[in-house]
Length: 277
Image (cartoon, rainbow, N blue to C red):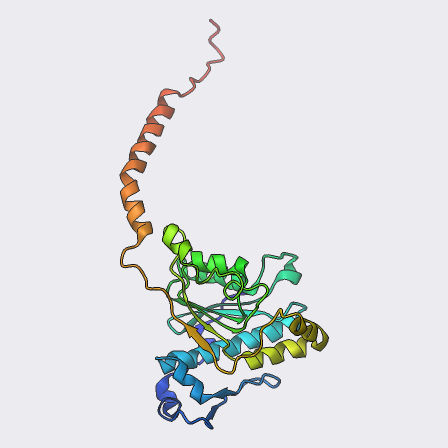
């Protein structure tokens, strides 16, 4: 799916909603206007979870967008998954699942969004980006997220059977970045359970019978009363990849020069068809 323009979204700033920051009353409720059939109701006392209320308000808005994308994908015959990549308050890429439409099991919404974001930003590393997903990313999506050095991962529903965090600890595995710092970035910050009740509603509306079986088998976790935040690992002061590239540069230059000279000395002479000696 093509990347969305930042103009397509109205990023919520704390100055627009001062009561959301100063009045954290348990009975207070924030509700954004949205299309019919999409119910997103957020208790404002959940804002105490984050040290930066403006970032949390943005998380709410982007997760609502994930729910909308999941509903759209379900109408197109896909499973109700949706993912959004955001950098510095701007939407860089968004995607639904494309597994059925492209007959490709690797086209998960998170992977499609990550690939699109790298193309839009014209860089591999996304350390300043947040990945939003309606369901916890699986290991197949979590490894590329770590390799792209994604800074934050926010999801609504946990996936106890297939997840890349709560089941297979890919997103928070320190060994990846400790032993292969040239490839994998530090573990990202993780926010789980954001708008989980609303995400459950999206899945239930898609197929009530399938949803009931998935819940009974434990494929999808229970809706969280409040989101949970898991801090990111500290970012290293030195980029080991850049350091390794700097140290290896002289050796690579010598090696390339040697190969060029060797190739020149072994050049095959051209045959002259007129000379027959």
